[in-house]
Amino acid sequence: MGIRYDWQEAEIRAIYNTALLELIYQAASVHRQYHNPRQIQVCKLISIKTGGCPEDCSYCAQSSRYQTEVKPQALLDKETVVNIAQQAKQNGVSRVCMGAAWREVRDNSQFDQVLDMVREVTALGLEVCCTLGMLTEVQAKRLEEAGLYAYNHNLDTSRNYYSTIITTRTYDDRLNTIKNVRQTNVTVCSGGILGLGESVEDRIAMLQTLANLCPHPESVPINILSQVKGTPLENQPDVPIWDVVRMIATARIIMPAADVRLSAGRAKLSHVEQALCFLAGANSIFSSDNGYMLTVTTPCPGYNTDQEMLKLFGLEVRPAFVGQKQVTA
Image 1 (tube, one colour):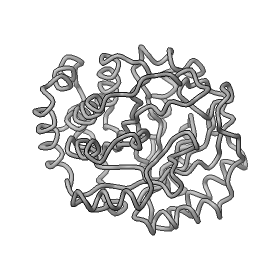
Image 2 (image 1 turned 90 degrees about the vertical axis):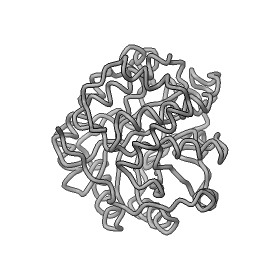
Image 3 (image 1 turned 60 degrees about the horizontal axis):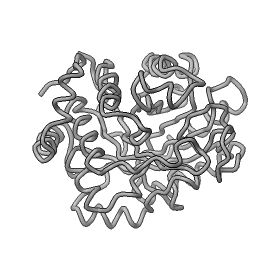
Image 4 (image 1 turned 135 degrees about the horizontal axis):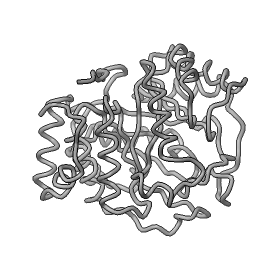
């Protein structure tokens, strides 16, 4: 199967609705064509600036509009971030993502500090990803010059459902940030969240948007909602594992060269359920040293637990910079 950028919703729907075991088999076959099926990339997410975000994302513990357990914290100092990254590298992590609870990047001393962090963590031999909110083309180029490997900016859901979840920015704002990153050699990380109350059609539409970007995002995180007390989505039901597997498998088939990352919400899954996700094409996880992925409201398995799981499955951690940047058709 070649790489395409002209997927129709009906085609993606047919893939998504394929009998489950057949779908997993097809996805596993595609996965082996484009990736080493024995390798899993282990990532670490560092919240470099926590809470106080003015956005109203209905799922987010860091929004200043909701009363959650998250307490706003100032930007971490560079030494703290570098120390966390060094410890992560010693535990098999090859990609460090630095997240700041900002609506958008501003050209100020804090952005200068982030650029310094990017330089220092990159110098450790790690892939560095940032998620800092909306970004201009000039800011993307400054991040590129600092050595940034990837920029994360999730679509979250479909265009039609988006305004149900977020009203403080538009879907096109998100796509425009991705477009700005594409003016550089920085790779794109963009995916979505399952469990926001969206329909299967919303999931298919989101996948179509991602799969028709040219090139595809090099990284596609599939997140499972972590219900946060105090947010509008605190009472959402859990997502069935079969829905997660279908999303991973469909993403793998239509974006074959991308890394599909089993991201937030993985702590809810058993080892058997995670094994199904890996079989369906997921080849990346987020691991932690403190039991949390980003904030105290998002549990994340620890380094030791994940190392034992990968050993059990006969999988190995992938070194940094193995993935090839995609070439447009």
